[in-house]
Length: 77
Image (cartoon, rainbow, N blue to C red; front, side, top):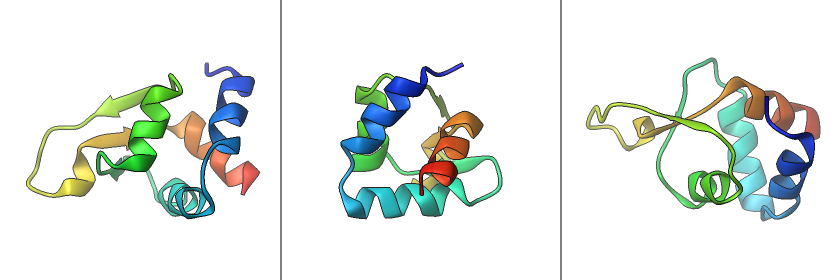
């Protein structure tokens, strides 16, 4: 279980563009693959758990947004 304060602190620090990207990813069905970009890096720096995915040749399959983070993003957005 992820600490709600950790999620809120992470969310508060995101730019509007990153919030929009997070909302797009959170709306997808699991697994929610994403590239290692500024959004993924912000999640890792905040200490939020992610799942590593095997490289498939597609940059959107390097890191996965987990359900708990996606649920928070959908509620916050």
